[in-house]
Length: 473
Image 1 (spheres, rainbow, N blue to C red):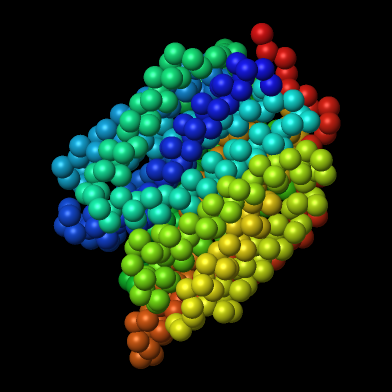
Image 2 (image 1 turned 180 degrees about the vertical axis):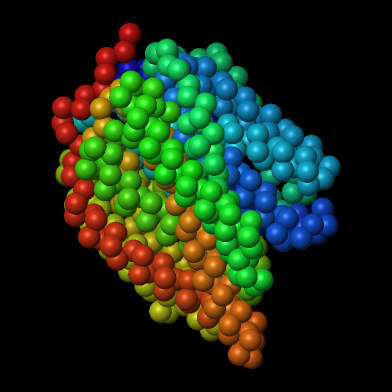
């Protein structure tokens, strides 16, 4: 990689880290926001739900957007939107403006990850892709893990608006540096936008994410018609969206080119990634609930308990990337999925009302090690097996699957937790015992989910050696 390309990738890595960190920063802050803005838990949850919804709606369009615009144009659009959204959040007097700021932030965030992946696949020669993708895995796995720790630290000394106030200078710095120094490593192509596909994709992915994120809330009062309607609309929208893309592919006019799935490695890789994302997001949401409501740990200590796992992922990612360049995906994926499954089973069987918090840290560390072994090989082999002109579409598919799987994981874990806890409480269990039982059931479902992932890991092949990066001018 020449110095110009290296600068582009570094700048994109740092910027993407900042925008993804921001994705999970709200979780720990919700109780504080509920007090400060006098809103209910379900209203506060919209700050996270609206963010995920916007991501799910915007990401499918990015494959098309990245083909129409240059690297620099896409970067300035994404970081510009993110900076404006962050400013709006930092200055917001109440809930409505904060929500609007989160939506603008999410629009920028949605463009960054596919832009980073497409750029990396375009400028990195196949022989060293694993190492560069290892750095991307740091961004994708460590940033969400650090979010709760950082917001816990900020909230222990400052007002919640500082969560955005402290991110803003970094975002603006990246924006200025990008405007001055970011080279164009991809070329813009003419492409027609199919408005019907954009609308169908918004209904499909928006409906699915909205429906799933509301299932958890609806457990105590039964599933509401809105939730059911969103899921049905999402499923129907998805079927129509896929049918339309398959038709438009013949003339190369698809919004999201699904021919990427013709590669078996890509198809298996994406399915495996969906399961791992469900496990990651489910656990990210379960462990703080368990630590705070069952073990009685405060927010700052909860954040610190999850920190070693996040750091371990970051430390392992570059080594995993280098190993991938030497041995390919399977020798890393198989032990990785086994570790994730073992950790989830351990959480299901060992974490109870009287467990030591060290057990939680140990299980989370084991899971983090497993995920570190899984993500880099998955991204690299899945994208590497796609034709170079479809990298932007492959990146958009991966980004979309991550968002939908993340929402699904959260929904599954929270639904099982709430339903089980409600049943136990009705049978006369104390609140702590009921919550512990709910957490146990949620982890059990998650553990069962991880078993087919081990089998799938054997089916992922290496990306073909001939998928060289296209020459750029």
